[in-house]
Length: 382
Length: 231
Image (cartoon, rainbow over all chains, first blue to last red; front, side, top):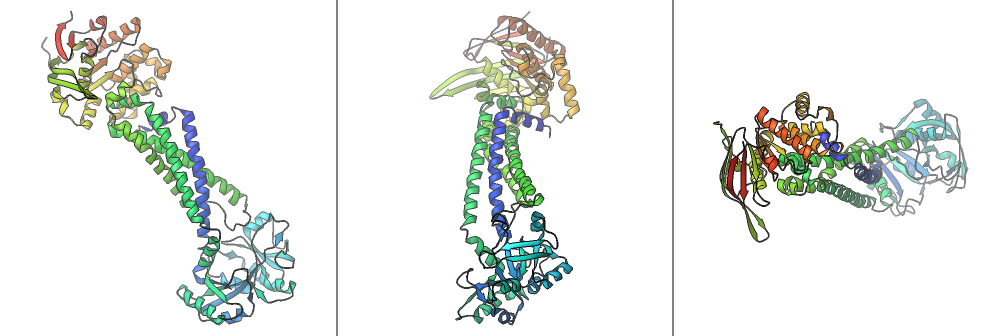
């Protein structure tokens, strides 16, 4: 602790350089946090609790092809299947295109059954019953309700774009859970479009995670060689596949993160090299006064670690603070994105610790050089 | 006066390599310095006086020979032990003061005490005492750039004595100062020697400065040319 004052004073000997270096690190880490947060949030969205018990059945050709409503009851008879919920992506417009949020037509009874094991899904039981009983009722997420000022009974008018129907809904229930969407009765949609009996996909809950593969095969076998063959997969695999449609995001984020880390390393190493070079004599004097080489090494490395740490704290902490304000406090949601960009605590902590590691790595070469340089060589620079 | 020998040098040889050339600097030199002595090392440039001072101070290593300080041959010490030797036994006074520009006078003087187990309060008391001894008790919060050359050298002397070392080594301590400041510094060194019993080795070109020493040691081409006492 007695050296802290010395480390800080040396770090701030050239305030402009220290500020610019810390700022470069902060901006780089801000960007790195954003990228890794996107990746983490996308991956986390594939692992909602209870998802190990859920399957999704869609048309074998593509997600945009529809399935017949008649499959519903047949699927319920497959051994191991507890609940089958038909769902359709509505994809309408609320007021204007800027207000994007997922809209699903579901069977409310089976949907509530489907989510029963999910601990993070919470809805008032009485309100949920209202939703089941009200054909024009809509269950909305709390974040969306907060954002648009919806309360129980609020009208929600959604203009159809995929389907030739507009929805005139009333908020019946407000839920908290892993997603931010609105769920309304598929009966209402069916009635509005002349009851064609179409379903976008089926969401299934099974009795045991160990039966997942067997049930998926059994469901697909039911409709093999039919006009509408099915592809059944776990909810996790389905969401992961959805993410993969965006391309190799994980690889891209990893490469960009490596580039950013290398940039931080070079910026800090350059700054530390300059700082050490311009006080060669001072380092020699310290050693002449009796400071052992390893103490000099620790002092110089501490400067690099502190500098990178300040940059890391500003960059990572700054991103966290900003994201927290935007997404948690203000309730903002990005269009077409179903997750928020608030980095989890473990990610914030890991990135700050990583910035310290980068500081250590970048300071190692100049600090070792200074610590090993003979005292007389340093004194001759005076 | 029969005083105990503090420094005993035997067969000290040092040469440097510059490219393909071997440059002899000190050649089989013997020298004894008594505890409490004030020795001026004199000689032309390249005579080896600064090299001798650096070797005694433990910031350079000889090629051959021994340097016993209070009975310990410092040429046999490893780097860590040599650093400890410097921290506890040697006070450095450089020609260009070599203070840390980012530290105040007080912090510069406190610097060697960071290597000791002293508490912050004890370090403060000792650094302030050292600055008061050199007459800069009212300048403790000044940075080197806010001090004159003479004042900077006095801070350097306070830094040299703050750990109460047995030996002060001064390399041209007045070389960068005006006559008045040089006189002040020499008086201060004289006081350190007479009042506090510090053994002082001083390299100087200035005969006037050398007159403050008890003993003059003349070097030329790496050998001891002659010694003389000063009245």
